[in-house]
Image 1 (tube, rainbow, N blue to C red):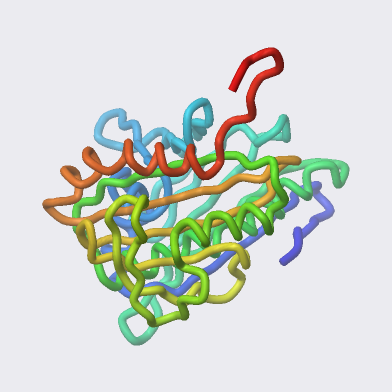
Image 2: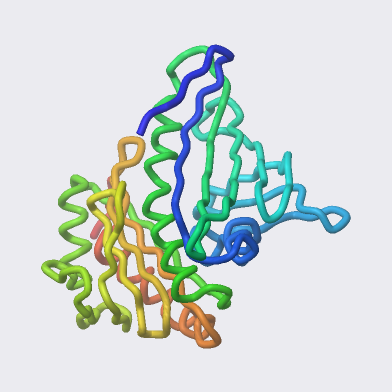
Length: 275
């Protein structure tokens, strides 16, 4: 993976993945609010006159990202431009869908910005590195749960430990240490009710990541990871539940997941405060 640099000052990264489905089905998954929310983060499209004009991604409290749509050509391509992360120049993003033989499509995302220095290359590379994990979730969603309604749980916690120690704590708490791809897993006591099969991660994945295809509390996908980000170590649980029972399960279990993650990675005690 690397940043492509052009004489004009444009710098870009590109990530691709093959997924099952027709172009129309894949377009629904990557270019609608309910579709993107089913495998990535909660997403909304704003419309004017029946045409999308902006897209808002919600990465968590205080971490919303709004982009204006600059091109819209369903089911082939759309482009948007928004503010960069961390003060970088505005970043443009283009999504495209290409038909391939065998009932699959190629999804491609290209992020680009204009800069005269290398100052923002790390940001582009960080964006690039984040996609393989979510694209694997997209593959599973389109393979097993295509078109089903989704309700998700996203819980993030910070750790004062190293990335490897945070990952060890997370996997030990989940009871997934030593569980191989293809094996069944059931959450141990103290963890919200969940069970399923460990799925392969695919190429380009962050090593501290595990992916589960769930059958309890209802059908879904669970993704758990630990990673370093801007000098911090984060633990993340993304749980996507599908079907008619999903909303009820999330209403019941989201507080339990937040309590469990908070217990695994408690906030540091402020100076002067007693335990």
